[in-house]
Length: 125
Image 1 (tube, rainbow, N blue to C red):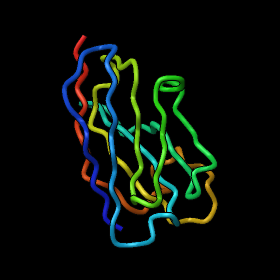
Image 2 (cartoon, rainbow, N blue to C red; image 1 turned 135 degrees about the vertical axis):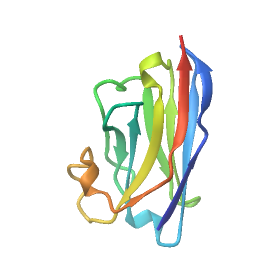
Image 3 (cartoon, helix red, strand yellow; image 1 turned 60 degrees about the horizontal axis):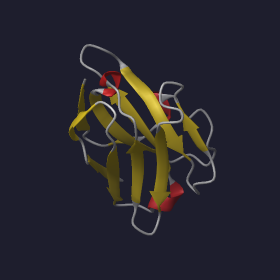
């Protein structure tokens, strides 16, 4: 499956932004999906994940209550709605797809089989 993330940009602290990740090539609804981010000089960190059917979601503590992951399997797209953005949210955001049946350990980057190219989010304070 090919993944393309977009929607990043430069915003101010407190603003909202929605990232999208469009998938093509395979049956999107079969994949668990995740969002990760990597700030300059730091490792790639888990942000949020959603199971293939959309029934289960998981979030990093740092984004709980501010970010919402969702998916539209009819559009082969997963979204990350980011509200009340903070300067520490500045990073390149990546979407990823996991082809396993079980939606467990989706916070682990090594669980994912496919990665998008990333979209940059910059939050100015």
